[in-house]
Amino acid sequence: MITTKTLDFLSNLKANNTKAWFDDNNKEYQKAQGDVLDTVVQLLARLSSFDDDIASSYLEPKACLMRINRDIRFSKDKTPYKTNFFAFINKGGRKSPYAGYYLHVEPGASFAGGGIYMPEPAILEHVRGEIDRFFKEWQSIVQGKELLHFFPEGVQPSGKLVRPPKGYDISNPAIDYLKFKGYFTQRFLDNNEVTDPGFADSLSVKFRSVKPLIDFINRVL
Image (cartoon, rainbow, N blue to C red; front, top):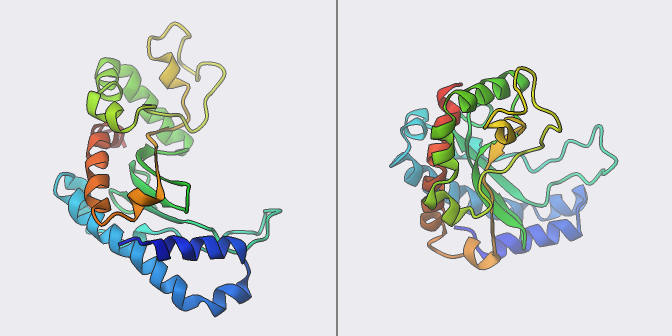
C-alpha cells in the first residue's frame, strides 16, 4: 500500500531531481514504486470483479505504471525524473487506444478518474460519432447520480474546439460535447486518502461509477 514514506520519497525527489541523487537513493525508489505497484495489484483485482474487459486482459501490474524517467529531448526542463507515480489500467494495456482508469500519486496533488485523454484524431472521430448517434444515452451516463457523486465536475474535456468539428452543425444538441478533444473524469485526493489502508477499496468504488462512460467510449473502438 501507499504510505507516507512513499510520498516522502517523491517530495525528496522533487527537491533533489538529479541522476546522482536518484542513484544514491535507488533502494528508496524501489520501495516507493513497490508500494504503488501493490496498490495497482489490489486495484486490478477489484476492477476485474466488475469489469470483464480488465479481467480478460490479464494485465501485468508493472506494465500499468508509467516510467519515472522524463523524456527531456525536446524540453527546456532538463530534470531527469517525474515527481509522481502514474498508473493507467485499461483494456489491452496502457499502450492500447481504449479508455480506462487512472491514478496519479503526488504529495498534495494526487488525483484519479477514468476516460480517454487526447485520443488520436481517428479515434476521437469515432467517439464523437457515437455521442451524436446515441446522445440521450450519453446524457444519462454523464448526468448519472453515482458518477456526479464521486466526480462532481462531471466529464471534462482534454481541450475543446472553438468551432464545431467538421461534419457537425452548431445547432446539434450534443455540440458542447462534440467539441471536446477527450473525455475523462477527475477527482483530487488528499494525502490521508491515498495512504489509508482501505484506499484500493474506496478508489475501486469511484472507478465503478465511471465504468459506464468507459464502456460507452470503448464499444465504438
